Image (cartoon, helix red, strand yellow):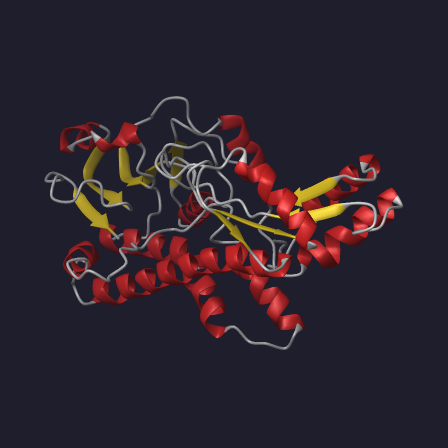
Length: 337
């Protein structure tokens, strides 16, 4: 999305123009990008026709099959995850399904049209966004009430139909972005989406909420303190740093007068600097007044009270966003979502 949170289709448009230059009669073009319903047919197809001089249906075919891969998930892979397939006509749908069947062992779900397939993928991600926002909202309330959100979720999970979403920063290239595509498409039709929009607003405010909570737990305005943020990627054990909320947290902490070090064993330091202007430190520079473990990388799971004490000073605070160390920290202050 752009600065106004409207869809930025630049990459999709440029890729389509590239394909159009090489398109020939009899070709198929299948899109997998997550887009709002209508984008493939209203934006991409006209570009293919203009760039190639060919006509959809008569000269070439178009399909849409949304990507459903979950990064760092060895259980749900490309080949064993049901694949939604769609196309501009029945004959094209048969061919698109035949090709995907060569590499996908799971079910092929045939949508009646491209817009249905686009809407299905949007619905998957919007549902996750809204559920995460609900957990974030409840966490804020229960925290004010002195109730442990983690224990609440564990108790609620004892019922068979409870879906175990947890509060979090909600970064990445899907959850912070895709709902906004749908909100933008809805606004053009004069349709309001208050639940989806509110969910986005709640999730967008989580970095600021975490920083306020950390400062409150420190009992300090942060001026002159030294902080360490461990984890930049949006998810554990991957190198993807897109829409990382950690960059926002760094800016907020620095605005409070803190000196902030950032580290991540999976993120490429040059990419972090290029995207956010933040240079991860090659080695820690203790002692720290605030340590925030923001991502549940495997490298962090085995750390203990003694380790954090060794890199901290005085009445230091450990911010455990993922809840990795609950009940294990004795010699530092402790805060968690």
